[in-house]
Image (cartoon, rainbow, N blue to C red):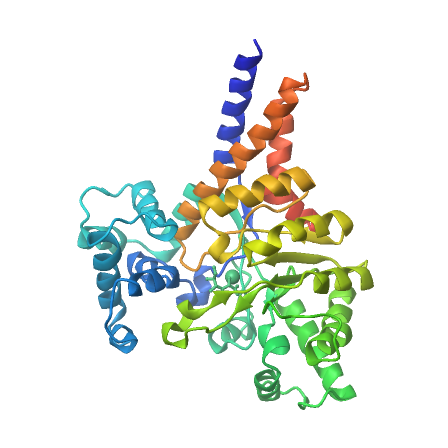
Length: 416
Ligand code: REL
Ligand code: ZN
């Protein structure tokens, strides 16, 4: 009977969604050769900036008291506030419990020192292998900023490409968002730029982009932008996009990734945890897509209010690929809502999720939560078809999930 076939289909979708390899197309993770840039382990997990801001809600001590603690002391403090004094029910806190559980630790013991001990005899290489195996993440795209001295050292010494599971993305926030700083960084690297938008400055910015794209073998060029980003305007950002970024991206057939709607440092006392979301104007993306039909744009937005129109925009412009549920949207209720209307509006022509992990082991819970939701939403869409007599084979389910979890990304960027 039909109900049995639907139940069987749902079981297949769930199994494949749980086990299919994914490409994680935006993270803040690195291979071992980047040394301290790759964060991992229980103290890093506890001092994730998502947890820092949650823990301050339970405290009245001056912010600086927290910042003056060692990392281990900060971790102890957060553990007490968010896990001992209150129940860890938020996405970020419950995610840590999922990590402990999947790593085979006894979550009932609530013994932080026992958890630390579990990491003590592990190497970063082992942990990378194990976490990627548990999370079934096969490829990881990093966030690579040439203005970060630690990171630059790796690339300039010819490194950065020894771990074939990792791919680079050239991140250029300060070129667009903090031009004076970019000028001084570029000058420091030997590029002949000045603050005025001169012909030589344009040439040198293009040379900088080109050299770093080649050096990193970058898969795309990326930027995060505030909600009040507008295009086209008579301003620095529009000139930089029109005269440097788009021409270089086109020359290398690289997509430009726009992450729009962040308001940096609304509370500077929280440091990295002090950024906020902000509603954006999607007509800026629309204008870019219309002007550059051959340029591909990977786009994500941070405000919930922008999500529906962004999905509609992707129906109008095939050079847009909507990706991920970014940052504050990476919570189960939002992932479900967004995945549902994206699949309803776009079918499987979307990249439903990226992890944005900053700490290695977060791959475990972020992907597990997302896999479950994406599978459930997809199964609901298939169920509708079953009720009309259309059935999907296991091979078709596999194909659709592969599109969502990896192929759409690689095809859109023109690789593999
Ligand atoms: O790439 C970005 O700009 C953001 O994803 C990060 O800045 C943010 O801090 C990250 O941890 C969010 O998940
Ligand atoms: Zn990010």
